[in-house]
Length: 351
Image (cartoon, rainbow, N blue to C red):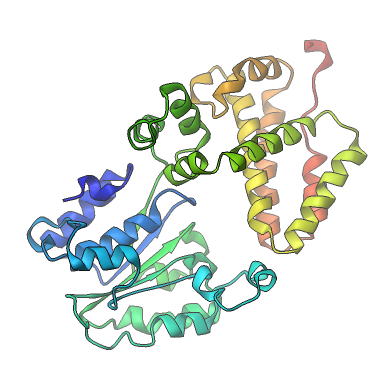
């Protein structure tokens, strides 16, 4: 048995699935949602293993060692089909793949092409679809018939960063599992245990992760990415103090990146920027124990005395609105420039 299915946090979700499997009440379709790098993909994989493990019928837990579990982990189990934006990009030029925004109907049709066939060598056939929030309308409609009348031996697992962008008819036909950020202490413990990080480094990464274990573990393996993010944070912090023309050049650069297919990077920059101003607000509000950038407490304490909390709060909301405008295809440069115009201003009287 794999303790908590080898997942960091989300014990309630694992317990729910285990109890459902033991009681013979497994759903024909699940919707696992939550922010990126929370562990949604791993939970979907473990569910596929638990449904087909040679020894899981009584315990509800995958062993991780039987032939079926090992095949599923390696992505070669014939009864487990996985699709998403990554599979859709196979055979496509990298620059064209980067510009793809939606899961298309052909991807869904290929994914479900043999859904009505009985399992080849397992108890159940499991169909996992990542990036489900990016289904276009035609692709979503193509899935509805299977969700309405699924074969008795098939389980569909949809994985989405947010369930709010999915058609209501799809959401209503799935058992929802909405994952929440994992407590910092659990992530820090996992980093110390599995990556042998020093306690101070583990605590820092856990704080920066925003409750995303996958992000924290990725940063251990890619320190250059982490360093680049810290440089980006310094640039974002500096936008409050540079001439407007220079700030607008930043908006122009981000808009170019967005149009060239790097939407995820722009959204990540907005989220990072927002995390900084959220820390300013939390420090000003007297709850510094909840801040993300714990290595910059002194800077935050100084800034918290220099801004009006109301202005900081409004800017945080503005960044949310900017991200939504980008999703709604508002001109990216105009949206970003408008956000810059709402940057909080230092109160000179408080210096």
